[in-house]
Image (cartoon, helix red, strand yellow):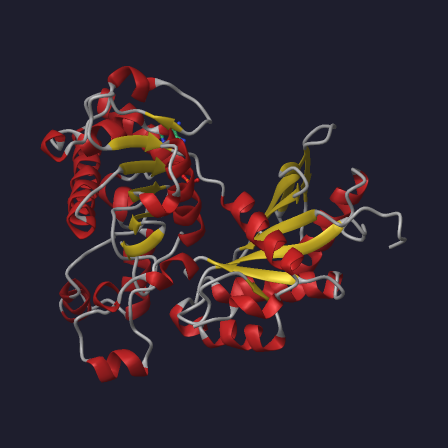
Length: 414
Ligand code: AMP
């Protein structure tokens, strides 16, 4: 870089899954998105890269085999270069990685060192699906730009403020500690962003408000946030606990698993697949897309109606539980695919909770918008809000703040 080059302000955000990489390139000088894209079916013959430049030019789609994450990132880099946004640019300040499990050690974004990698690796047994993919994504990005700071932003970080009485399962303490079994929570980047944006919507500082955040996507979780700090969340050791989700059961009696083993003769892996992939809405009615479920309900489909009712019943139980945990609630915020788009879910979730000060205004609830907004009537004691989540912006913001502060080690606190 010459002395005339401006301060690097671009951040590449990478969300690496086992067979996919989602990416966004942002310019943090004005938080503008420069490009977004996705590589999916990595390792198959039918891999696909969809790249959308946001600085001009058309969306591009490439199909054909992409062997591994290294090849995927190389292809992404080539697409970015065609728009003059190549990863070799001196304008790139850092790469921010979504890392699903940070355990108890990482309560803040952290510049990735070999020590940090070793800890992410150590957590593989509690996040066997996610952390290995995140590690591969980081290694690949490091090989592409070894000179750049790589920052890990952990899905669990926001929940590390949960008090011990919310985080511990009521099981034998020695066994729990030996195997690091406790409630960690996930979707933390979203819960942090949405709770802060909700405070903003109310014209208050996050420290002044108590918010129940309902992140309802294909995966779904609720959190109770007191004065900007998470005090409880519905996901636990893994993202299986809590709400009814697209394909995950959420809460069940743990004895169901012994029963399936002893009586149905299922293996641990089969039960894992059943509860993670064949349960939730898809298990109940065959569909996990809320649009399709609503369409079927409108046509009088009883199975879809029951699935919807089970989903809402669980959601209501968590709203009630977190109301009790917080004591006083200023806002309930809906976010993610279902929360942002499905007005019937929002309405059904608060119906009957008027005594708790919760209500939804039908007209406001029906408005479709990408903007954060209130959907409760003016008289309601508790604000009900729709706040679109933006995990990539949050990861980029945290990554950029960390590298600008020049304090790489500060995040690795207990
Ligand atoms: P996410 O995981 O946040 O991307 O959310 C994905 C889910 O959001 C899908 O499986 C759908 O159930 C739901 N969804 C997306 N768009 C809509 C919509 N317009 N109406 C209802 N549900 C939607």
